[in-house]
Image (cartoon, rainbow, N blue to C red):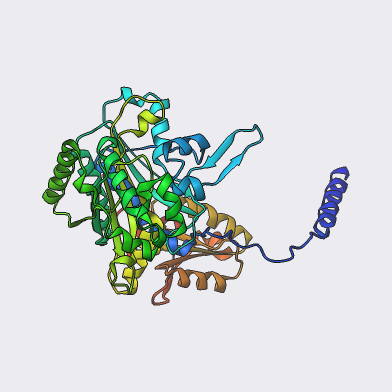
Length: 460
């Protein structure tokens, strides 16, 4: 009796708690600007891309690395560059409770370089070839396929100076797109080394100074802070100025020119279509020599200016040393996954077949009627999973009609129906969902009968 009183008291308290009024919001909560939900209907695209990435990485013995979302802000200030748009305008920074200045990662390469140094990876066989997939954060103007939190696939080859490394990371990006049926155009350039880039930056500055009155405000500021960034401006008037500016290929030293020509020869061997773009510089300070982007035209657009970048990267031979490591050559790329997903959807709209399994094909739906049957059906479900059947259920529903409607909606081929009578008889009903025929069988013979109906062999 005391136990019963205690239970009643607890039940009464629970009811009283449920009656407490919860303050309501003045307006519904919505996504923060620049963020995006990836809903279940879109997950098959993402799963297909991740599966392809893992397959290609295995083929080239590239190992996975994951670095933190939060890093010391100095890593990006020093590694990416103080005068870059990423650091000046886009980086999410904050001071934590301990007084440390931290940042949400805006890109992967600096964090991977930090990990390479911190964990002594220079003692491993070189090059160290790693990849990662994850979220990046940039407080940029949101645009289609590029959000303030976006997902990126990243490859880094660290510890190799030869042009064959540049060429291979480019080929891997090309292979990824080709495997998806996407045909972007490779834009490629060399921005030289610090020695030959110095005279070029001086010539570029002199030219842009003479055009100062026609420049946008950002470019006027860049004139004295980060000259190469002038070439990355998207303002239409600045684009006109850029087209008449000095070209870096006229300033490359012999070593940088030879390196670039060797990269192009490899790309020719791979038969990758490309366009030499002498004004391609990328948006980060650590790049040296080879830089590249894979560009794809937006749907319904035919102007080159409307092409968008899906992937970009290059060589960064000075980054490791600038972060406190030994002089170490490296190269890599980053690839935006949201834009790839949008392209796949565009291809579908244009009736281009893409190899994406949108829905899991359901072999068997397990239905039940009554509490005892429900308990037995739940254990049967687990048993069928162990036998590798593809299943679905709606154990929270009591109505058989509702369960059969769910089975139809999911496209199940067969539904197993277990009720009180079947429990007593040791039987189960198999319903063919296409024709509606059903039969009662001995539950002990269920597995071989299901396999025969589905046309599948038993699996170990």
